[in-house]
Length: 290
Image 1 (spheres, helix red, strand yellow):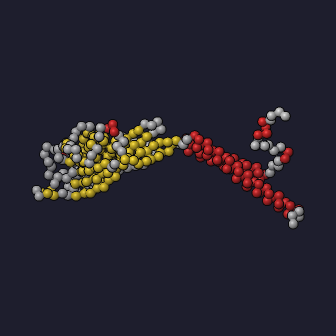
Image 2 (image 1 turned 90 degrees about the vertical axis):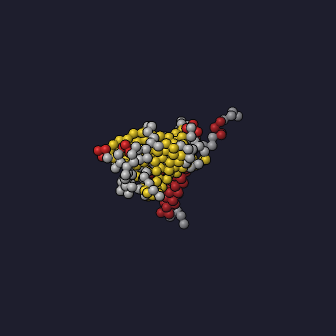
Image 3 (image 1 turned 120 degrees about the horizontal axis):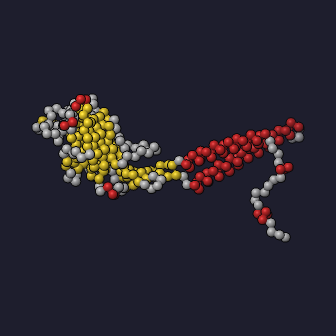
């Protein structure tokens, strides 16, 4: 007897003359195909799109930075002349710089009565502060007005990723115009290192931060202390990492098989129940069932 490969066919075919099409089966089949198409398009959209996975770990992610963090500051002082405005930087490594001028710009406001300060500078990865004040001015004003609006304060690279909504510029829009003109302002920042890794494995380093602030008029035994806008910072040991990923192909294929198989199985059970019930009803009407 010659070998017949067809004996291993587990998907035996039913002759067409032994099958019976029904309107109910046709309706269920059309609905089933539309449902499969909808789920398939949903899965395809998820497969094409990327997802952002985040994790936390203890480490210094940007070891090539030389222990530095880049800072971008943009602040307006509408009632203080530009020649009086300066940036001072201090930290626990002994840095004490008064009147930092590198990569900074002062733009007069209100016909020269105010000033907009824009600065790009670096700080060490140790606790410290930088502050906008009149300390570097040649002659100190009698009553410096430190009311201000913060347009931008960010650290590290700028991340423009749609699915990441972090506090990368938490002080944006901080408005202290209506505050006491002679008051100092303390912004206490907790800086959190953040890494973003795209699909190609390229990493970008930025920093999120939380902020608390207070406003006060300070005095010493010699009288009122010159007000300033202080940004006191400390670094968190925890790093947040965002990784851009795409759904694996095998998972997409598995989902599609599950959708098609599950839909046809449920539709077959539903069609079988409806057909059996209709046949039983016909027999009852003909009096063939007691």
